[in-house]
Image (cartoon, rainbow, N blue to C red; front, side, top):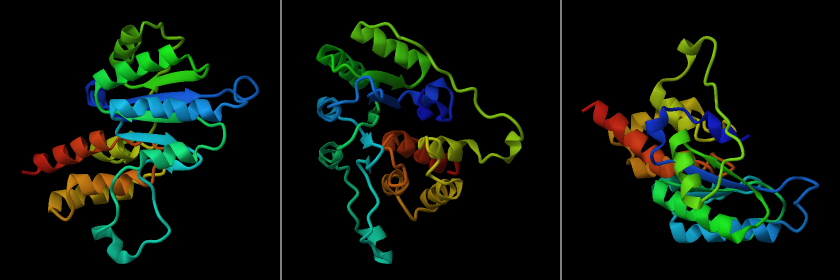
Length: 225
């Protein structure tokens, strides 16, 4: 089970969203697993992930305690993959996020060959997950679905906001921030590239997909033209 199942959108909306996890199981294979978790993320780097994450410490784009009001215009917006890998110091689920099927397929095949002895999950559309498994020559152990939202759905934010905020499975990206970034991009106050770095910093587990978020923001801007 993974909280990335609750990412909002139809199957087509995940054409640039592939998350691959490695997870140790407490009392089963978590002893001395830290080097394996680091190696898992190291193996992802040649395939150009758009984000990687270690939940206890964060993703490749992180918040900082040493910022001022003026920092918005000149803060570091580059992802720091090495910081994530070097910071892993305890058993946890780690993840690599890709924005194209070919990279996800190649990475999964590499993970299979490495045989790290860790549990591996893929989170994307059903068609995308099946394609990755077929390419890597493995059969899916199980498939999990999100049943979506029930109840008074008219009270939910709009589709664009939901697509942005649900990319943090722990709900750390607020609807208000998602709306603000959409409005700022529409108003020309921030570029989509700038806006996605603001959003990504709030996702503490590093599964936020900047490429998908950029596309969503660009689509929102085009709809008002």
